[in-house]
Length: 210
Length: 210
DNA sequence: GTATGTATACCCCAATACGGGGGATTTTTC
DNA sequence: GAAAAATCCCCCGTATTGGGGTATACATAC
Image 1: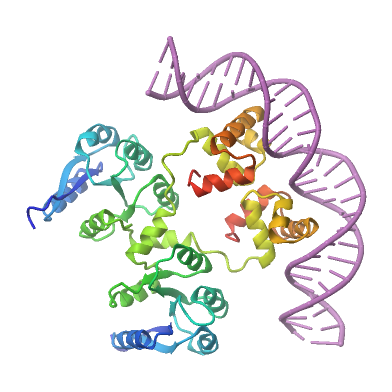
Image 2: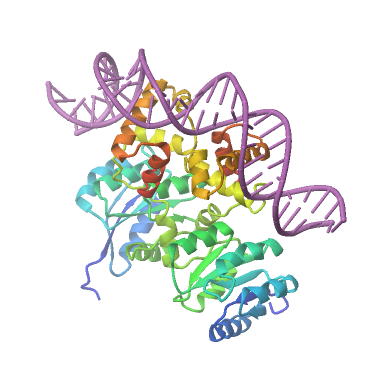
């Protein structure tokens, strides 16, 4: 298998020890090759154009341009490159920001170092490698509150409101009278202790009622 | 370690071969015990009250009440029980429905059978076990379209609209004039070829512009 | 160095939607 | 059979909406 063209990787990580460690580990693995490693995003954006790696390991805590901000910049010059985030912290905002900006994987450095090879393989296969704690955060973000004060019908209507629908559209779509929708909305406002669509949506999303 | 109280599991799966296979596999593993297995949700809902398992393996394709509908019913009687979905299909809607209703894990049966033990362990540890293809679907749902026709400012405003904010609220919050917000919204409508907030939100979400 | 795109701001208008006040009836659920 | 949920009705004044047209400052691009 030694003739197979290797999976190419680039590393952006300011800690020299970690950077060299990963480089060594990856290069020591058959069919994997580190094309280049960078200590900051600014340098990386210049070098990556020539490297054209399949996978980039991207640290979040970097001097200058942060890892999160780097994602769209990298995607801009290398749209097909897979980005795997590396970090010591599992900050929730960072996780969702990185994912919405286009990261394909997210690993915390507490992971066994060897897992990085599996992660690279997985991402090349179209997968989405995540550390256990990251998977937990991601899945939890989907879970709805089982203790919503809203009834089923009220929840349905609030969801439609959150989709920007007017009362009359909601009425037509649900085959009920406009007045019924108004009644439900009034009840929703009382239950959530709000006085506008905006606040109702905010409150409901905060509490994961919708 | 044999004296440690085992992790208790229940199985809801209509295929007898699979059901018995999992039961055997789990019971054969130290510190794991299948309390009961059911071929349908109706029976399970009666028996589970006494079983009180820590983890439930729940098939999606079931006769009568489907696995997805079973989740809230199970959560209702056993709020602390972890539910791991089992299925042969990785249908997207099913994945998101199961997760919003409270499933903690999602495995496709194509997975190596032994992985079920790891998954049970992971879920008990507060994790979120997923098959590779499921992780991919979940992560992909976060990715935004990098080819949005909307400018940065337009995207910001459309996000606020999707949060139910009025033009005037958006103006105040962004420290710009109401008329400026109106101009942006007009441009958004032209670009997305829509004529209402509702359609703009729908179009933007469909294309993952927001 | 001029064209393009972006963000900003202004005016006018008619139609609709909104939030809040009150009350009533039927269907479902426990 | 009591309680909760879903349905429908009327009145009111204010705010919001979508669409028409126009204009300026600024940056970047080519």
